[in-house]
Amino acid sequence: MKQETEEEEKRMEAKAYLEQARNINIQIDSKLEQVSSLRQLAIKASSTLSPVPPSGTPNPHRLEETIARMMDMEHEVDEAIDGLIELKADIMKAISRIPDARERVILELRYLAFKDWASIADALGLHVRQVYRLHDEALKHIEIPGECH
Image (cartoon, rainbow, N blue to C red):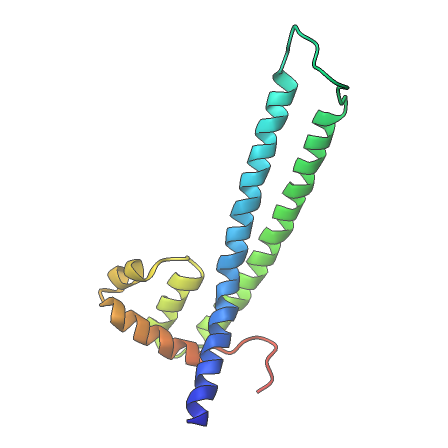
């Protein structure tokens, strides 16, 4: 019973480690959308010409501030991409140590190519339940970098 619990904990830790790449990728996509939105605002702000003066005190630095925020976010995206590349390289090394080729492919498709379970099953010509089983077995073989063994 204790061994089963330890194995389940190891699988959960391995899964959390592997899912980091997907989470970072989602964060990058979100930041890219925000940069795009800021870029749209900057274009609107620079192209708005109105014959009627705006009410209130105009902010002459509004466009400048928007561009500065956009550049800061682009820098954040660049850093996140660099981190994702490093993490994917570490994940590839961990996956490459798995002895079974099908298990390696399943982990690569799931955690590096971000494929859903049905797509993975189709690619391998397997039933989704078989993919789940092989995935579970593969997680047992993942060694997280920095762990003491």
